[in-house]
Amino acid sequence: MREIHSNIEGKQYHLFKLEQLLKPMGYTIGGNWDYDHGAFDYKIDTNNGYHFLRIPFKSIDGQLDTSNCTVELGTPYLLSHIYESNIDENNANIGNFSASFNQFQAPVDKDGEVTERYVAIGHELVKELEGILQY
Image (tube, rainbow, N blue to C red; front, side, top):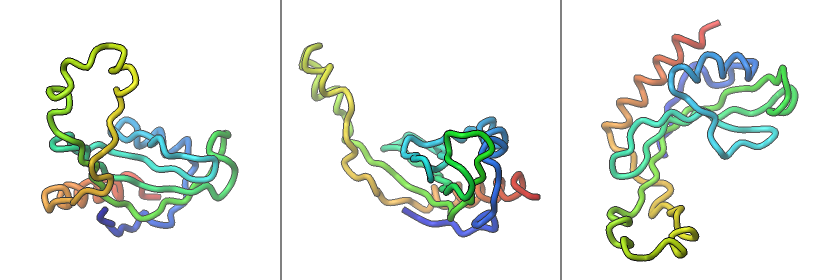
């Protein structure tokens, strides 16, 4: 994980408005959300795992699943989830019954190394966010 400090940290927005701004850019609300916190994820690359820019937020007024919820943005960060390569080739003959139980692979490293290539991309994405999320 690599933090990218930004002037969007601590800024407050209506969650609905943030979604309207960020989803057309390719951001999605990550699956780790709860009623009081969550994150927008931007998938940078799927080469050798998954590489994301994550923009965390917390509710400061209301719950995330209600209308008019206000959130405060946290520090953006980059993360990499590294998966075992060639898993499909190694398990080609496991059969449909077994495959129905083993279809979701856990990452080999949930906090893989973030290379300088992705750090540079992350800085550009955060700069773009700063421009879009101006008051």
